Image 1 (cartoon, rainbow, N blue to C red):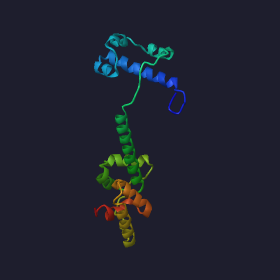
Image 2 (cartoon, helix red, strand yellow):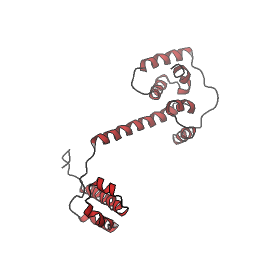
Image 3 (tube, one colour):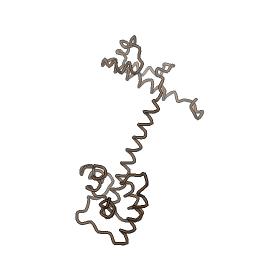
Image 4 (cartoon, rainbow, N blue to C red):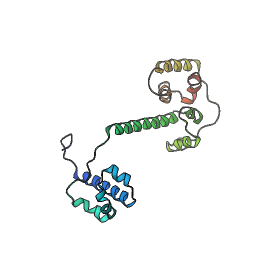
Length: 186
């Protein structure tokens, strides 16, 4: 039984068995003894693993016992998942900022994005190519409002790009127009 009292899915366990056996057989066939040792495979099984075929893998469905005892390294899994969340957040903030009008040189200062990556992201987001020319300046009232809101966000733990996006959304002013007042003053 699983944590929520649902029965374990034997099909999924069979898939794990099959994949583990395939990995071990491939390691044996390529003489990757370090991997076999890491997997906990007994040396007495190495020669037999070399002879495993696809037909043998298909027979795994008929074998009633689990071959592997899978458990996660909780710390490594947690680190990986935190990294994935961070990467996803950065990608989302980058896309969000592009939608809000940030220009490539501005975004490059914050994230290091290349011109090619920037153009590809714009295209993937269905946005037209960047307009060339001067960026319209903020009015005094817009600038004062933007600076006041920026000051309120200054102590938050979110990144600069996320702050710029939030400011752009709350003021209704494109990031390219906010840039000089906010980022040039930092």
